[in-house]
Amino acid sequence: MLSWYANLNNCVQAFLAGMLTFAITSLGAGIVVFFKKVNNNILAMMLSISAGIMLAASFFSLINPALSGAENLGLNPWLVVAIGFILGGIFLIISDKLVSRHVNSESNTKRLILLVSSIVLHNIPEGLAIGVAFGSIKYGLDGVTLLSAVMLAVGIGIQNFPEGAAISLPLRGAGHSRLKSFLIGALSGIVEPISSLIGAILVLNVRNSLPYLLAFAGGAMIFVVISEIIPESQNNKRKNLMTFLALLGFVIMMVLDVALS
Image 1 (cartoon, rainbow, N blue to C red):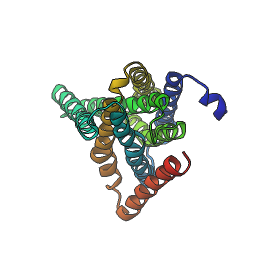
Image 2 (cartoon, rainbow, N blue to C red; image 1 turned 90 degrees about the vertical axis):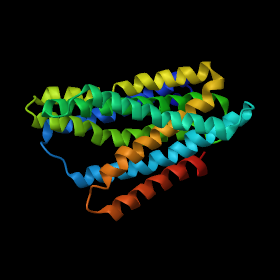
Image 3 (spheres, rainbow, N blue to C red; image 1 turned 135 degrees about the vertical axis):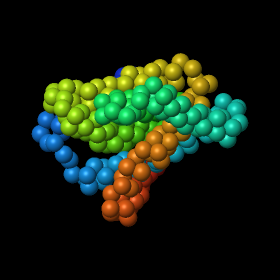
């Protein structure tokens, strides 16, 4: 199975990895079919582990290869990565502000629209990160392997599970049907396979953009982790446990990326 996947075109690999994260989002949204509430401890633990995985993946699979790629192209590594990294964060800040400006959050319905829009916007750079990781395999950069790209997708998928539930459960609580709540929650993740494919195509066709795209994806990923995932997981009373799980997630990703690559 793994050898079959390894022999696929990089764009196809990226799209399938994006479909995996979409499927996990759908599983999270599917909770609404069986439950009205979900154990917050379990969701917080999943978020904590995924935070560690995504932080490690951002460095080992995106930022470090961006430095190597910029050097190979004769560019200034620290300047290229700094520009791409900051732009990744700015993209999400602007996106959040645009959504907030056009959606008045006073009513429950409009707050739900804001929630869905915010998650969808955050899924776009996550999908791009997956596509960039798979597309950059072609260039043989340090730290860029099929395993690291797959683990990056898995880490994003893990944190997509509670995101799917975070959309479908409030929709159900607002009086929408189980089916409608599930479909909206699931479809919030459909942008990931699309943006994964776009990211891979960009990398494979415009090599000079590779370091910038890798750094952009890394900046966007770390922005999401710091602004959304860590604060959400730290709402749990067991803050030390959640922090330790984040460290564990980081170590797992680091070992898979460095020791086994």
